[in-house]
Length: 200
Image 1 (cartoon, rainbow, N blue to C red):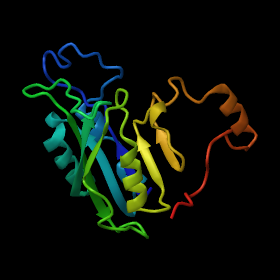
Image 2: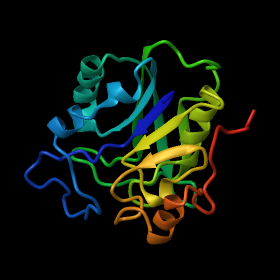
Image 3: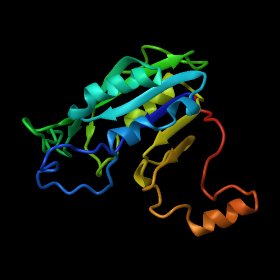
């Protein structure tokens, strides 16, 4: 893959990790995240976009080194309400109105990569739990046009044409029976878009 993006389900370490906020997903330990076979998914190099929480910022930088990446940029998503005000949510010391996505690179840059293509700040409405802004996908597709894109820990509300999305919450219970039946015959899944994007 030319670009991998993930929003790991970070395990929160405090004695009262959510402070009354219900998490709608299971969490993974740092060891489980470290053991992901990212090197097998990007053998020749590429970009890695990782959404981080404050408590995992340094861990993610160390993880980049362990996986053979170097941090090259970051993108900040400022979350807004429908009335264009800051969408504040729970934080430990301060109320949070943003998320950070660290951008790392290793090996050779994917063919066709463009630079200086977008702003490093996204200002858009807060979505559903763990749903990332559409703009991040647009930035990645502009950075590496017609690339091979993978999203790890994706959810059904994050599915996008020309991306491979994996995660235990994409459908909740594996491939839907009708899609499983279709793929047995070698046909594609109805409504799925295959191949490289034809966006310019």
